Image (cartoon, rainbow, N blue to C red; front, top):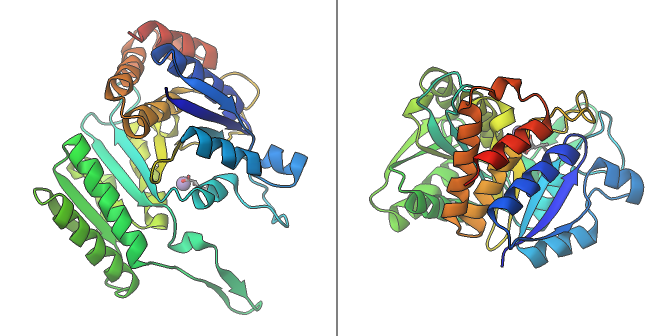
Amino acid sequence: MPKLCVIPGDGIGQEVIPAAVTILQAALPNLETVEAEAGWGCFEKHGVSVLPETLDQIRACGAGLFGAVSSPLRKVDGYKSAILTLRQELNLYANIRPVQSWPRVSPRPDVNLIVVRENSEGLYVSRERSDGETAVAQRIITKQASARIGQKTAELVRQLGRQKVTIVHKANVLPLTDGLFRDTVRQEIELLSPATEIDELLVDVAALKMVAAPETFDVIVTTNLFGDILSDAAAHWGGGLGLAASLNWGDGLAIAEPVHGSAPDIAGQGIANPLAAVLSTALLARFAWGLEEVANRLETAVHQTLTAKNYLQLTTTRAIQEAVLVNLR
Ligand code: IPM
Ligand code: MN
């Protein structure tokens, strides 16, 4: 029986996550859920952005659904972003970010790509130092982390029947770090998925192509910060952040997360779009639980909700939730 640790977090996370859980429960009636705390509100209350119990609960469930967190604009001693803490503590080393042209909301009809973002190292090791004159950030690339993201990519390509992987890097300027990433990822994919076509692009060229010809991408695999940036650019083609889903994925453990933030400007009004959260639960169904049929039903319900004549009149979280529930079959 699938188990889910629900972590609404801050701002609109408190609105979109309950909506997504209601819909997921309709698709998966035997789902067991527990709720846990993380985020800025959690930090203000308990002095940590992720409670140790939250980590235990996610481990016990094997899967989590995370809403969004607010971050302070100034540096606050002892505070570390909840999502970065969860990724690190739970070793969620891959971030899967699919983008497809959703009807009505996407600016073009032909995009169907997945960004596989290395989620554990690169510039996100947060090793910075400064003497006031010179500030240095370390960017760590290891063979081990590059190999496992290559393996995850190969696994994904095989599961989804994808044809092509584009490795995105900057090895012309960073031949040791990005050269190691590129060569290691390529080796793993060649080994584990020999029929897959592999090409590579420098990240600046990939950015241009993401703007000019996004339909030419299939699966992209890249380092942490490049993946952060490229996946936001890609999300535009899917209909924007309101539709962008992601899965932080490790070995036997996953946390789904809508890519959007906590949107303090609209929080509390009941008008946040829950579709990115719903699509994130579909990623849990497909990848964490191996329930492809449930994932398809959720995605089809979202598709039908978007194509229905009244979609643009659905201006509240509740109205979209009800529409998806009606379309779920
Ligand atoms: C994301 C976000 C996070 C990141 C922030 C909130 C730390 O932008 O999930 O893409 O940079 O990874
Ligand atoms: Mn981001």
